[in-house]
Image (cartoon, rainbow, N blue to C red; front, side, top):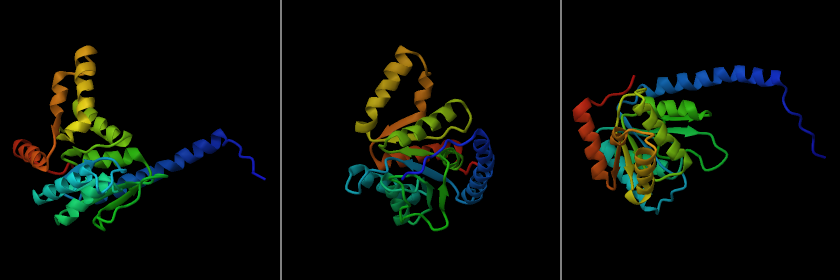
Amino acid sequence: MRKEQHPRSWNEIKTNDSWAIFKIMGEFVNGFEKMSQIGPCVSIFGSARTRPENKYYMLAEKIAKSIVEAGYGVITGGGPGIMEAGNKGAHLGGGTSVGLNIELPFEQHDNPYIDSDKSLDFDYFFVRKVMFVKYSQGFVVMPGGFGTLDELFEAITLIQTNKIEKFPIILVGTDFWIGILDWIKTTLLERFHNISAKDLDLIHLVDSEEEVIEILDNFYKESGFSPNF
């Protein structure tokens, strides 16, 4: 016979919330201590569902390898799909390969290409996103789902509102991104005037690893490339 479950009392909820503060603090402290040692890095985002035979998996691997060969490290969400491709490319290129893993009921598990001392696990998405933004000097965004879009628009918003320094946001895959970029231009900008035209200058649309490296190198020459301590 199934045991009846009673809703938690308000006092139980308040007590659990209070103790959660210490867990959140612990994730921040551990993240700051480890991430402050990694040096200049670029984050690669994309779908956990992308298979190794997919052209974007293979392209993400090439991009990551080119990034580390150009002297930068790579940060991913630490899981399968595009994240695995990013860490694999960084690993094959002999560069820094960081994984910021999140505990999820599906899809997510550590990939084997993360440096053993640069793998971090998080329970809280918002703590993990702070690590991405604080310790990345560029975002490479491959095709993905809601999580990828969340990370993309969070970065754009923080740069747009001057909460963080400006860094390049590079969308890879014209066939995937062109629809949403057209909607941003025609609907958000031209029809409803909810953004400024200069906000679109934050975004670069490319299709090759050579274009990614060119954008990153140009940014390095113009503004310097160093960890956001």
